[in-house]
Image (cartoon, rainbow, N blue to C red; front, side):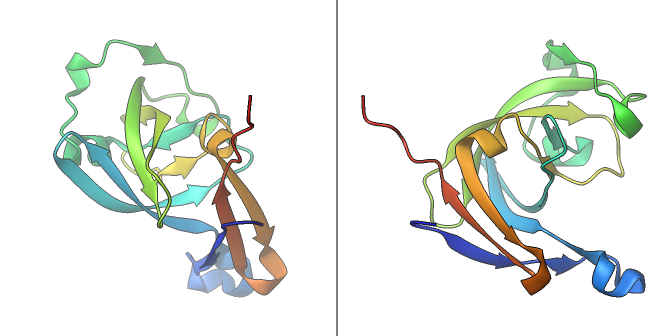
Length: 142
């Protein structure tokens, strides 16, 4: 991968041993003058990026001011969600605007899914070697 950064898989559950390693990416989320450092789980099976409720509050968002509702599926279907656009910085790359489903769920990790994290970044997983590489999408010349 050209212009790629490498990150290790993180052991999220030591009780699982080798099976507990997950691809967590350190990032910075920004809303106006507020910034939050976090780790996002890269989930190729997730349709949309998910922002935990507490993280949205730390960024200064107010639930009642977010009027675009979104229905989540799976184990998050029971929780309300709102659409947010958040500026995200990954490593030394330029910040990008990502779309999130801001959920009222308290125990969900920050998740990067197909819309639109994997539309903005290329990721190559080397699970057996416990690392992954990431680079911004290559913009086509028109």
